[in-house]
Length: 185
Image (cartoon, rainbow, N blue to C red; front, side, top):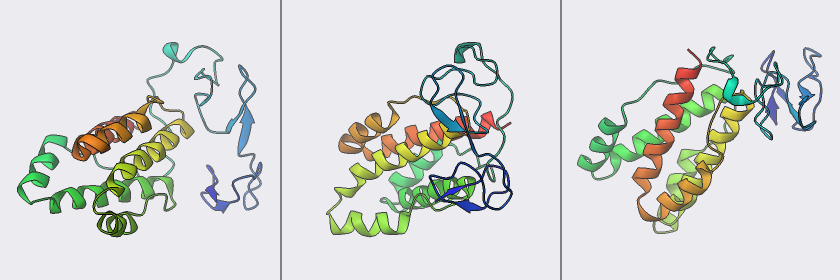
């Protein structure tokens, strides 16, 4: 399921039109012809400005249209210190807040930190590596669907950091989320 960008009702992923408000929810990029979300400002495939048809580097600084509530800009250093001084408990609070911000903004549950916590314990900690990748992938998709700018390599970077230092991976993700919240104005 995905969410209609206009009425915010759940619709099937393959839907081209919302069954509730009857609005067109996808369109083709004028540059590459790929199908993108109707409200996107940048093509997620060629990264060109859909409205103006030009390269993304000559693109807007105007705020993005909010899909849902915009999350809170969090101080990364504070959360890293809290995580270290609470023997990891603060790390999980941070992950729960990050996942909650993303889920509220997307208006659907794309991240499930409770299941992730259980799987981290069941896999003796190895699941945290995949979590860095998964959270990064969801954040990249969310930002691109809204026409924002983000590195497409973030999931791979999350995977590598998740293997060596998971807290650094989540710090990078929080940095990207903070940037996204600022892009919303």
